[in-house]
Length: 272
Image (cartoon, rainbow, N blue to C red; front, side):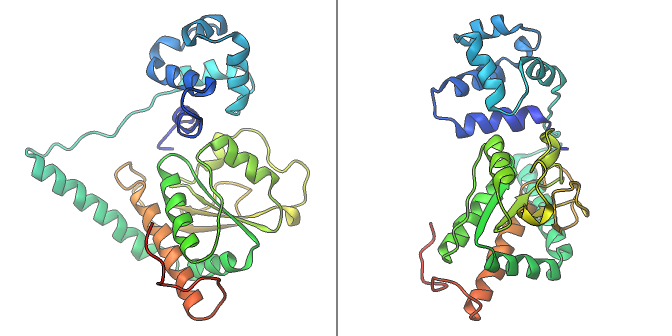
């Protein structure tokens, strides 16, 4: 995994909660003082965040943790690093090096993405009653981009920045729902320890596609994988996923232009 559970959980809270809310304030304080709070007890952390201990306990539940003990375990286990900066001598050389790497990653995805799988995914997009698009951190950018493109073609899709809200939606969705998950490393479900769907039969669950730089599905919940070759590095992420999202939109739109269903004229809307 490029990211551990710590940034996935906390950054999604900061991005999705209303500014100034209790949960946003707690998450922001922890992120800004990550080394200081690792060994604090619940009373000490509540004092630092200027809230009661009950607010800390509710915060843990709201972000998908069992209790404060799991929060402290998560804080102690976090070890996130940004990949090394370029060693090129001048700013122009560094810019060009980065651009070359990004272009190479997109070319790699373009050359290895399965055309057959892409066609199957687009057929599902035209068939299912409901569609949801999800991703974590950078990967959510691809989900939002595809959401906008699909809307321009008359196909509404749901998304949400919060990982906890994403998991909640997935666990409650039925067989009439198609869910696309953008996950560069294929590790999307590894951040959630609890079982999804309870005792529901597979035929009553949503169909889940994973768009990923991994060549195989890493979860029992995933029905199909649209994959491509990748270096699994931070430089290639999220550019390969954004490319995949763009290709999905264009192939879906081509199907509409050939009369395979749709509610809006292709090419007639201005970009958002």
